[in-house]
Length: 261
Length: 304
Image 1 (tube, each protein chain N blue to C red):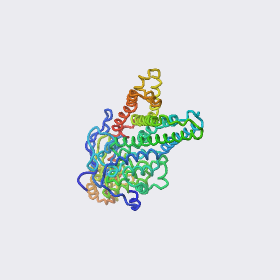
Image 2 (cartoon, one colour):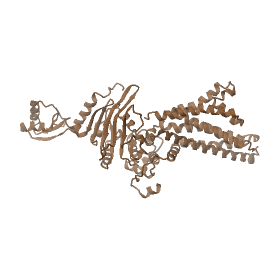
Image 3 (tube, rainbow over the protein chains, first blue to last red):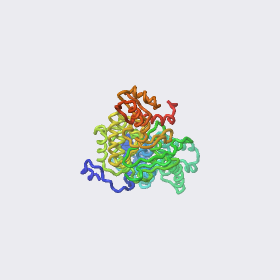
Image 4 (spheres, chains in turn purple, brown):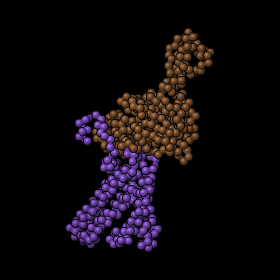
């Protein structure tokens, strides 16, 4: 594509047979949109820089008996858990806040495909960030042991890696869902950060066994203590359906119907 | 020219909470021609164009571009260039980046973005600035560049001359004429008559959601006024008064007359007066037509 174009300097591209825009190209376009603005670049830079910074601080300041892999994952994932919903929200709301939907949905009128491409792009970045976090935790744990003679244990390593990645990605999905449903960045950020936590605060006194059905923080807490039961998984599924599934469904319906102005 | 129109709008309507914003609008844009879509602000032009490209769901009626519903076109950017609002661009992206994103989505080489920047007369330095710093005129140029990216056969432009200086308007006219001469079809809207009267082949005039006039520019012009100037304007005025032909003084001398050219020539001949000029009164005629057609339907200036 590119080579053909460089040889044909000023000529217009050849009118090839028209085919639907391949999905992969939509995803690449959406990935590029996440990285080609100042706000997007800063967000990504923060996402990437957060884990090494947290890990370094841990290596040098944490008490040596706590320097193990599970702790590294726990601490380095905390900033990501805050930042990933923002990534999800911005992916979805920027078309509306900057009104670029007027261009995007004209180039691809099948809005469902655009939404899916945005979801895949954000999820791809989220998975990348999670992998980075796990790698940094491995390095941190090795460093902690060699530099400070820390504990360095790998207990629950596999379980921790999977469970915390799941938590991160579900908060990313929550951001995506709320972004779609609300279409306004500030509103979506407010709801993503305030409402689930207010929920936890309101029902904090209730029995954990009951509240975990609809409190996402509560439902996710056994993932951090590595003692999730079969029932726990079902509760997690229920709370996720409430906080992620339903907003996502409403959002998809809204985006497909809303008039783009 | 082929028989089917490039754009066909049939009975398109849109209701907003009980208010009919667009009311059974129908018109065709023939291949290789420029159709001007005229109307005062708030008449329903933008809503009609948004329905045409699938951004707004019509309440009734249908619209096709190149024989299909817009939303059914595959990779529509490669066939139809659309500019609905030049300001609807991410203020943090550079002009060039916006075109590259469009090119990427349509499956065109990056190079195409730079070509279009050049084509619309933006400098290399300007193309590398964030669009937040652009003037409205620059945004319009960028928007036109974006519409032309996919080498389309049809252009749909909403108020593209808005914010352009006279040189910019001249440039836009030339560009659209060339596009139509190459067989392309253009639908462009404006609330200002003089912006499109030179360039349009056909006119569709809309007022309060309804079409109030539609046809070739020349047909709409005929009968709306003739300009006449003679060696003896006073004598000519007396002659016209005598047979009851209505006329008004023209600011440049001579008269604007509400009669057929032939009729005026006969009056002059009978009075032995030599005519210096006798032609369709383009400006005043079309202006009058526009004012007359939209005055009743124009929204009252209640809100500011």
